[in-house]
Each structure stands twice: as structure tokens, then as C-alpha cells.
Amino acid sequence: MNPLSPKPRVLLGVTGSVAAYKAQDLILALKPFAEVRVVLTQAGAKLVPEAALRKASGFPVWRSLFKGSRPIPPGTPSGAHPLTFVPHIEYAKTSDLILIAPASADLLAKLAHGLADDLLSTLCLYATCPLWVAPAMNVKMWEHPSVKANRKTLLSRGVRFLGPDRGHLACGEVGDGRFAEPVEIALQVESHFKNRSRWKGKKVLVTAGPTREPLDPVRFLTNRSSGKMGYALVQAALNRGAEVSLVTGPTDLQAPSGARVFPVETASQMRDRVAKELRGADLVVLAAALADYAPSSPFRTKIKKGKGGLRLRLQRTPDILAGTLEARQPGQVVMAFAAETDHLERNALEKWKKKPSEILAANLVGRKGRGFDSDRNEFQVFLKGRKGPLKLARTSKSALAERLMDLADDYLKGKGAKG
Image 1 (tube, rainbow, N blue to C red):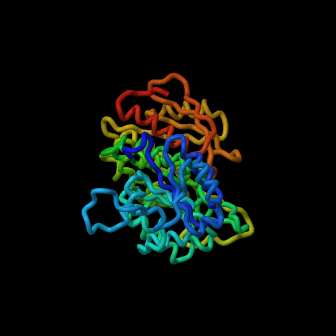
Image 2: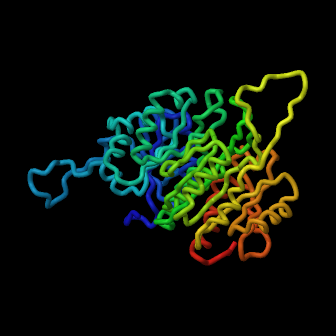
Image 3: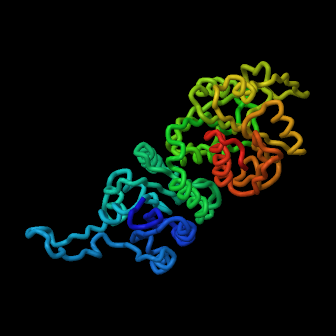
């Protein structure tokens, strides 16, 4: 923590992305818990007024690598360099986190290749605090091989990426490249400062996404799960300093940096990997939406369309929750999920009685704007030791993940349900 401020200091870099106009909203979302100082690039200044950022942050906006030098103070040994204030060193020294949001493709290239031709890129070379980027660009730019390579390089160095999201872009196209919502970025920053050492030394195992059960070489049975809730839970565990293993079915999501990732396809493959990773885990979060049934005998060749109908014989897939509860070690905490289309409380309670985990988060699916393939959700949470479900109101999956991990924290500490 910065000794000069009671709040952690966030150095916000604003670059020449069209999403730069959202930087003011991001500053306002960060200010309740952080001191925000802004570095504005030359390209960024073409898109957002410096005065607006200065007003939002309450501090001068830094622009130049050389502006702000001051003469040598009295008593300094002779022969010393006449410039004693070096902006990129002083700014980086006093920052607890560097957040570049929005981050342009140009900025990612500078970071990946160690270029330092302006204040922002230069201070990033000196800084030892965490470096996070929230990219925003056209989908074609985001998918370009050079941007992919730069991203891979930065991830390998521990740079954390927030987004980009998928959706409608400023250019009119639809795809990856949309700037993450400022409130979501602020939520991750706040969780980092509040929780970063809480689970140090803890191991968390998370399952996420759907499974695919092959029907023939080109078709499969699956469900509408996007994996967003499971991935948000992974990030919430990482925010608390845990070692996280993610067993994931097929999704379009980028796994949070820092997690050990094990991709699988079928429910049987997920069961086998969970069994291998279960030993040593302090918290097991089973958020994957498994297919309950799979074809008994998948066809070896593509099924051809005939005149009549087609009958399929299905068999039950493995019950990973039941197997985990049976095989778990003393002290392991299990969080399970239940997705229902009707009679939520009744059906969830029936499942919980048969397979009593410490936490069961139940939600309705099949409705627009919540559950599968949505950024928002709401839960009724059943907690061991608590009478009646705890209701978590509809909000972002990131916020819900933080709340669920707070509930899990009580069990990890042996305190039981607080709600």
C-alpha cells in the first residue's frame, strides 16, 4: 500500500482507443476505494478532454515524459544531474497498480516489445507493481495474428487482461473487442486490493462450461451454458490469492490468467480430471453444466438424413457432484449449482438433500437476461447450517462470484454459514 495515501493508488493509462470516452466513468467507479492518477497518451488526448479526466480524478493529468522536471535541491553533491525528478520513475514508484484502460493495439505492441517512446510505455518498463490492461479495438484487430502474439507474450509475463467483451462495437461490427464495463473493471480492482492475500496457500478447483456428448463424428448433445459464471468464480478465487485449477468444457471465453486450465469435452472426461485434481483442494466449485445423458453408442460415421425419423438410445452421464462428495477429504468445502426451469426452491432443495454440499447456488434458466449465456444472474443459495435460502439479487456474474466466494470463505475458516 502506498504510504503517502490511505487508499491504494491506481495509475490509469488512457490510450487512443475509441473507448477512451469511458475513462471518466471508470475513474468515478474507482474513486470510492482508490486514489486515481491519470496518464494520457498523445492519441488518447485526441479522443477525451484532459480537463474531464482531471476533474474526475481530482489530480493533474500526466502527458509528457519530460514536463515537470525540477532543479537539483540544495545540499545535493556537485556533479549531480540537474534534473532530479524523473516522471516515469516517480509515478511508477508510488503506484500500487497500473491499469491501462482502454488499451489500444498499439499500446499492447509497445508493452510486448519493450518500446518506450512516451510517458506511459516508459513507466511500464520501470514499474514493479501489477500491470493490468483492458483492451478495446475492432474485432479484426483483436483477432490479428500480431495482436494475438503480443497478447500471448504479455500473459506469459503476468500481465492481466480484463476483457475484451463480445458485443456491438463502435464501428458497427459485432464480435470480441468491446471495452469491458467500467463498473466491472472497478469491481475486479477493488477485489484485488481487498482480498489479494486472503486465500494465499489455498487451492481451489473449479469446473465450468458445458459438456459435449458425441452423437457422430460431426454432431453432439450439449446445452446453452456459456461458462461465464464458472470463469467469474475462477477470477474471484484468483483475486483472493488462491491457486486455481479450472476444468472447463468448450467455451468461447479466455480463461483468467494465473489459473491452471484443463480443457475437456465430455462429462466422463470432466469426471476423470476432477478426480485427479480433487486431492489437496481446499474448495471445490462445481459450476459446469454437464449433460445428464449421452448417446449409448455414438455412430462412427456421419448420420445420413433418411425418409423416416431417428431413434437415439441415451445413457446417464457420471454424477460428478455425488462422486466428489463421496471421495472428498476431511475439511474440503464443496460449492454446487442447480439450474432449474421451474419450481426453483423445491427442486433445488430436493437436490441438496440428496447431495448435501456446504453451498448450493440455484437459479432459473431459460429466461432472457439471466442464467445461461448471459452476463447477469440471480441465485437462491442454500447454506449448510442456515435455515432457508439466502437470496442474491440479480446483478453481474462477477459481482455474484465475489459474493459466493465470501460465503465460501466462512466455511474455509470453519465458521459455517453467516449469510
